[in-house]
Amino acid sequence: MNKVTFNPVHSLKQTENAKTHTYTTFEAQQSFSSVLKQSIEKINEAQIQSDVMTEKLARGENIDLHQVMITSQKASITMQAALEVRNKVIEAYQEAMRMQV
Image (cartoon, rainbow, N blue to C red; front, side, top):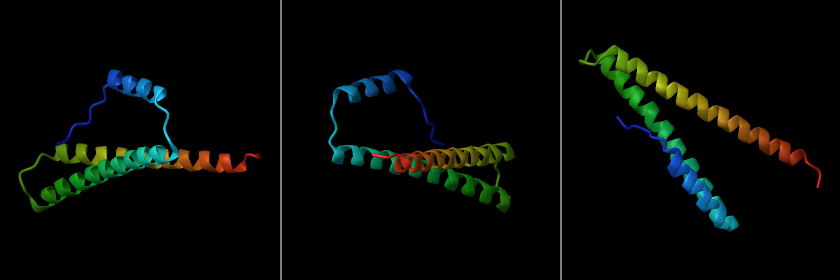
């Protein structure tokens, strides 16, 4: 099972480094694209892992019900969080489009 770790010091250093570097439009698009792709891949991996464990339980393999439920909830929460982020991005885009120049 893959564990996702968050290191706030490392993230802060990356943020500080990003402030000193000026990105071109192309670099910004590539960076956003790669972050989006990685996030979608992680969501997909969580869903696949949940499906595999559920199938093992359904086939009667020796697997702990608690682990199946935990994996299923992690996949569900990951998907819900992604949907909320998507909703906020769409809302921000719509708000930007309403602005008068």
